[in-house]
Every structure is written in structure tokens, then in C-alpha cells.
Image 1: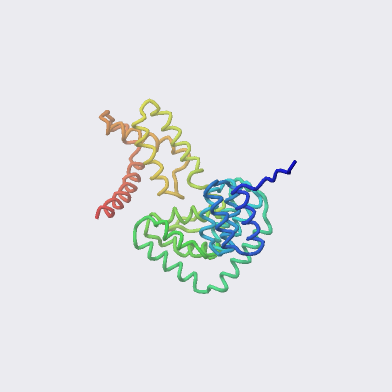
Image 2: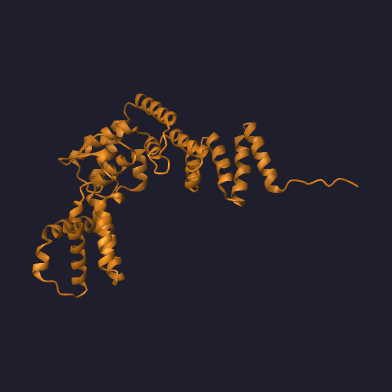
Amino acid sequence: MADIINFPDKDERLLENGNKNMEAQDFLAAKNDFKKLYQQTPTFFYAKKLVAALQHLGDYAGALQLADDHFTAFMNDSEGFTGYFHLLLLDTQFLAAHKLLQYKNTRREFPQLKEELNQLENAQTLLSADLKSVKKKQLDYLDKVQQPIKPQDWQTLIKGVSLADFLAICQEYLPHVQNPFIPPKLIEELVQDGAQGEINVVGKKINLAELPLPEDTEVLHKTLAIIEEEVQDNPQLKMLIIPEIKAHFALLYPFLPNENEAIDWAQSYILEYKEMFGEDISTEEWSHYQQIQAKKEKLRQIYQSLDEDHRN
């Protein structure tokens, strides 16, 4: 009786060819094989294969974009995590590399990766002596625009710069900032990157190591919890109040209200929107929230000027 020969299916042949092409350093052919596999079955396994081929071809941005589609899987895979980290270094995204080492699900020590990052940042600083000057000019331009930083402009600003240089640039810029949308963005980036030291924002000093991220602040959590409880029977009111609180606190960061002021901030929004819906609010009730109302009015004027600029 003749033996039955099992021929590999199309996916197996592509995978085998792709692996052979990688070994032969024919990375373009390997990319084409793995791309076909991934298009047919977009799994993490095939994504890792394709990311490796793209990396060898020097397409770091494309490799990172694909890896981001499987970010959690890369973070939970030791080889994937290291590979993702090296991609950031190859793409000179040093701040993103610092951020990755602060990632909440990877609180292990990575001395070798930290040392690699430190060496590359030092080399970048030596080889790009004028880089800080270029970044300062970019930041000065964005300050004059009086608008939130566009994603593309932000990526241009933070790419290629070391954390030490970025901190120094921020320390020089923030005492004289004019654009209200920039300080929260810069401070949040520094905190996410694990920057250490004090920084002066228009005459107010803050310690970066002690500062939580905006979404982790107790005053925000407490304010939102009070709103949730107070207006739970009025979903329309809740839908209007909560986005505005988040927008206002985002602009106030890092100088948010104290935690013990959360109830007053929450009540000021509740009373205001109840009045908008026709409920009578006494002058005596409003008198307790005059300072908060004044702050809210300034914040609304900033956002209103932004809307007017967009219409024009």
C-alpha cells in the first residue's frame, strides 16, 4: 500500500518560506510572506514575525504602528516587550522608551534596557548639539499659536530628544509660558516618563516625583463620584457636567483644587446646570461658590476663544 504524503497547506508554506528568507537575510521577501500571513490571520504570532522583518528593513515607524495594534500582547510577552523597546530606540523615540519602562504592567527592573537607553541618549546629545535649540524654537512657535498642540506637532517636538534635554527645555520654557494648553501637556509627559526634580510653572514650583497623572488625581475621582451620586436620576445632567469637569481639570493640571474642595466644585456644576434647566437657585446658595465660578469662567473663556478661532 502506497504511503500517503501530506503536503503543507498555504499558511505553513508561507511561514516556512518567511522563516527561511529571514535566515537568508532576504528581509523584503520575508516581509511579503509574513504580510500575506498576517492579512489572512492577524494574530500576535504573525504580527511579531512581520514586525521583525520591518525592523530589519529599517521601517521602524511601520513596525511600531503594527506592534501598537497588539500592544497588550507585546507588553505581556518578554521577547515582545524587549523588541518593542528596541524599536523605540531605533526610531529615536527616547521619551516613549522612558514611558515604556514606567508602564504599569511592567514594574520589573530592566537594568540592561535602562543602560542601553542612557547610552543612546548620551550619544544623541553629543551628536546633535543644536537639537535643544531646534526644540526650543518649536516650543516657542507653539506657544505663540495659543492653540492645543496638534498630534503631528507634538510628535515632532518629543522625537529625538533625551529626557534630560526635554526636562531642561521645559524648565526654561514653563516659567514664561503664554499658551494655556501647553503646560498640562508638558507636565503630563514628564510625569509619564518618570522625570525627577522640581519645575517652575509661572512662579509655582512643583515636584515631578510627587505628582500623579491627571486621571489618577484624588480630587478628580472624588468630584466625579459626587456628581455620579448626586445626579444619578438625571442622566442628561450627568452627560453635560462630567465632560466639562474633565476638560476644566485637564486645563488646570497640575494645579488642581485640593481634595477637600471636591464637594464644592461638584456642587457648583450641579447648581449651575440645574439653574440652566429652570430650577431656582438662591443667591445665598451661589455665594458659597463665587471663587470657583470665577475660575470656571476663565476656563470657559479659554475654550470659547478656541471655538471662535476654529469658526474663523
